[in-house]
Image: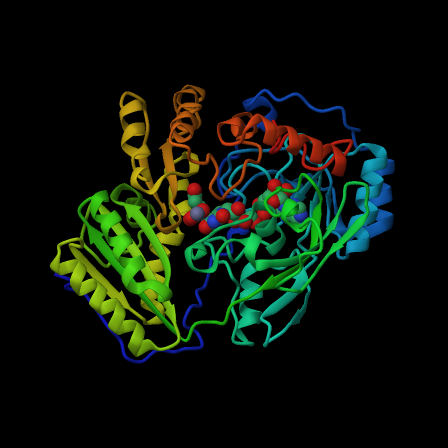
Length: 509
Ligand code: FAD
Ligand code: 2HG
Ligand code: ZN
């Protein structure tokens, strides 16, 4: 029992939680491209202007020729999403450096009815970050200045195109860390994180971006710059407008600056990787972890056996445990390693004694923690090697968290699939559930959708726990939003973007 438990006394505090995250964006085009979105999903182009040479010349006069990309080969990576599910055919990528440039671009596009697709790191998983047709792509990749980090308040102010990992590294110099962490950290931008309200691996402890974002600067579709860039923790002066932009996926405005509340970097980090017999045992372990680890619990994730295989088989990563039906990662963040280890050990000893857990390993060594986190963070990458992945990201009542996997296995028993499995943010009730197949198939898609959304809605879950609605789910939004809410969303869209130039075909049905 707990044969491989390793508890290290020495711990390099400074680098405790640092991992070399993948630079994801470079891997996009190694193999075949997805079919054009407009064909695969039979979408009708909106009544937007077709880009002319005069339009392009305006952009070149504004930004200079090096920041206006029109070469088809260079445009390609901005047209395809990271998981290669969707593909547009934009012929113009714009790379502003300042808010003023964003404002001038949008004012011009608004006046000329040119559709715009805002893009950060292009790691989004619901097809929101790439054009559907020929929308101009407004990339924030050169808006990467960090303006200030306040050691005392923990407030960071930066441009929206800063890569999350770069922010985290800069914060580390001040004894702080970013309030969110995700596998795409090496590529995603803070503006993209805000626009998708990204959750990540430690939401359980540090909350979501509605809590951590203190302020934003946003440019409306008509080019007007809205200064919501408060750095105050408390500010109850009327409507809290920033929240409208958090999670609105580029449909209401372009986020240009972000003020973020950042927590201190923990001095003690410990990680346990556990093997369990059943989902029932996972639930018991979760409950116990919350009660016994309490204030030091920083992450509680689960992985089923079939999902772990995408890391061990497809990516050739090694698991520190032999095979079990389920696995859990339990992480602690605290300020006193001795105290935290004592708590974690006691928790594990009790869990073993009561046979909640079959086996496990704990460590606070940086390399070993990185190795274990890779088994969790590289799942998305591992799945892509199966072929085409039908991805779902739902919130369900905790007792039913895993029920969707056996239900889907039963439903698809006679279909040609590679794998049907689930994993995710157990502590937040958010399961990532996937069906992989050798290639995309309309027949399989029809079997999965809307069934998966009906299933979720019947349990009063959410059809998008963290990745958003994007291009993939607008027609299903009613499974999670009432007609009254959708009506208000449409009214807000009309108010902020009357000509609908910002990220058309996304979010709103
Ligand atoms: P993009 O993908 O470029 O864009 C996402 C959306 O935001 C698009 O609709 C785009 O139009 C809009 N947008 C981007 N920038 C702006 C801006 N400045 N202003 C207005 N709109 C903008 N998500 C999670 O929630 N939790 C996870 O744990 C997680 N892990 C991931 C792991 C991997 C390996 C990958 C590939 C993705 C993961 N994601 C996760 C998906 C997640 O949504 C993104 O990684 C991230 O938040 C998107 O940031 P981005 O800069 O790449 O945005
Ligand atoms: C994660 O939690 C991300 O790893 C990605 O949200 C999930 O690939 C996915 O579906
Ligand atoms: Zn996730």
